[in-house]
Structure formats: C-alpha cells, structure tokens
Length: 207
Image (cartoon, rainbow, N blue to C red):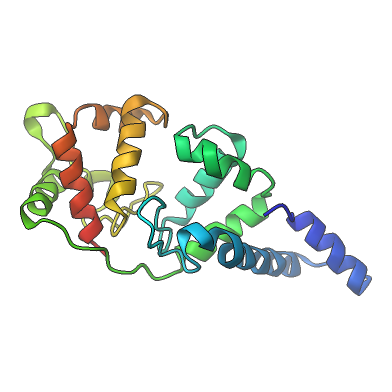
C-alpha cells in the first residue's frame, strides 16, 4: 500500500533508461492498482470486490467517481466514521491520484454478485420505503438518488447487494454526522431503527 506510482515510475525509468509515455504511466497505474486490490484490499473487500464479510462493503460494480471521491476523503482524513479512522485513513494515506483513479476503475468494472436473502416481510417494507419514502415522516424515496434498482446515479453510490450490516452502520454514521453529508444526515435523521433495518435488508437482496 505504501508503494507510490511515482516510485514505480522511477524504477521503470531506471530499468529502461527512458522516460515513460502517458500510456505507459496509465498502464503502470492499472497494474499497480490491480496488485493492491488483490494483495492488500482483497483481504477485507475480496479480490474482485465482492466482500463476504458483512463488516466491509462490497466494491464490485460501484460508481467509479464515488469510489475515487471516497478514497480521496480517506486520504485527506475528511471522512470520519469509525472504520474510516481505524482502517482507511492509514490505508489510503500514501495513495496518489493516479492509483486512486485506477483502483476506482478496477472495482467499477467488476461484476457484482447477488446479495443474500432476508425476512420477506422486512424486505417488502424496505422495498416500499426505498421506492416511495415515508410521506408522514418526510422521508424521500431512496430511489430518487440511488436508482430504481439501487444501481446508483451520477455521483450517488450503488447500494444494490450491499451488506445490510454495512448499510446500517453507515446510516448510523450519517445520523450522528460522523459522516458529514448534509443530504444523508437529513434522510437518516428521519428514519427510525426498524425502517433503516428494513431498507438495509431490502438492499442486500438486490443485484
């Protein structure tokens, strides 16, 4: 994780005796990112980004721009939820922009696996909240930003197939402002625990 693209470029220049062209640098970043993804990130997120550990998010198929933004937030120590502080601040500390962009591209192109099942009644309730919100509480439909099937839209992340445990943990971080994202703080603050559990259970079933 501590090997930078700059160091890799210097080593390659020394070996070849010539300055690398832009395409070679991009290729070097891709290879470096793949080694990191498989050899380092894969221990928690799975080598293909399909984490089997509910504590850690699935990254396969995730929005490329969102992934890059989160890695930069980890590196800049501006994302303050407990796992970011405990794990990702240190992991991202020495990533340069080219490696971040290459990691984001790597995971965005991986196929996401189907999520797990859940209690049918809870999943049905979660589907209703996700698609239509909760009018009485002023909760907007999650689908407006995250897509009808949780696929993500624009800079909003993909949620389909994400571990319910991870989703709940992030909603709690938004609610407490440990993750300081105004729009999500507003949404999470109007959801009660059973509603959050239902939405998380529903999202886990999607692909």
